[in-house]
Image (cartoon, rainbow, N blue to C red; front, side, top):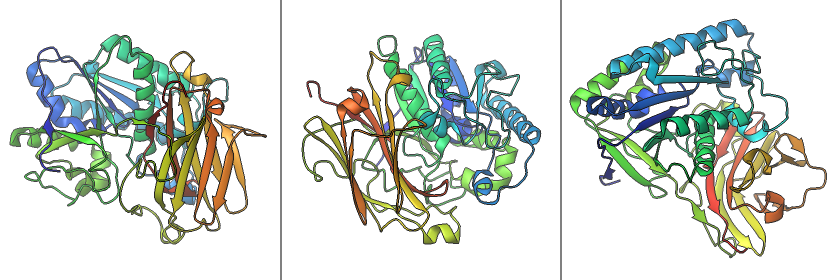
Length: 436
């Protein structure tokens, strides 16, 4: 990326930062916060979770250690206090911070499965199904996706931001993904009331930032896989702003002790923001829209074990297009699905005149010798769709009626072994042509 449009602020701006966990606000927007504070702009930071699972999420999938829920909640309170301390270094007061308290590493599961009258989601470690923190925005709120959407809509309506910073749809952390998706739906629902500039930030992506470590004189560039898929913008940092951002980051001690080199990689000469554009669905064949998500060769996540890397199956090529009143989703895999490896495709419909909780949220899940179709958490016995599989790919054809005759479709695909993700493509938003 050569340069990039520079983000500017003026006296009329109202800055809202939606952070998945305590530390993301510093990592991604520590410089933005300082600029807003220096200008006296209204600013609010909202945290989706307390970050109580910390870096143990993959461990719990593999080894199932005994961890007491009370200890995990205490970790959440520690990270809450770290977030307050870091914000203080950046010039914010505690009353400018809001903590929602939804379950760390589980909000993407909530997005996919916990809408309406289904059972609330259960936290991985605390085993609670409600917000357990007395200093959260709404203690005791059930872990349902409807509640997250209501919280975000309420905050947007109350604060009325002009610039909205949020996590990126190509991020490889599930809470970062879900927060972007919830925010998008909230903005569509409130489209007649406010239209802030949306500025997503990327934090988790394989082999990025490069090089790793403290390099304050280097620019923060987008990953190669994403450079051409988005219009990127930058917010330059002065040396003093970088130093203050680094000082704030060190207040997130639980994270800094484990990942100092990685976290220091974001102490660069600029902060980086860019969204993946909405795509208009068009008639065609499997060549109609190529690379409708990340472009380039898929990368194997470095956190996978040797056994998981041996089972790795990547998404090599993908396309989406219209065929009459059907949406066709075509994916080629890097190799056949092996024993224990599964793939899922997600297609969620949206239309303004129907509550999102009531819209179909299809997941087509398949492995070597099985397949299932779900709407949220409920299996569909006789789904009205067609799935044609080949050894190294599949073509999924879904009638628009099955998706609730949507105005927009939110879609993604992933491969995984047990619950550990192997590869996935960024969630993309697809516009359905009117009159189809």
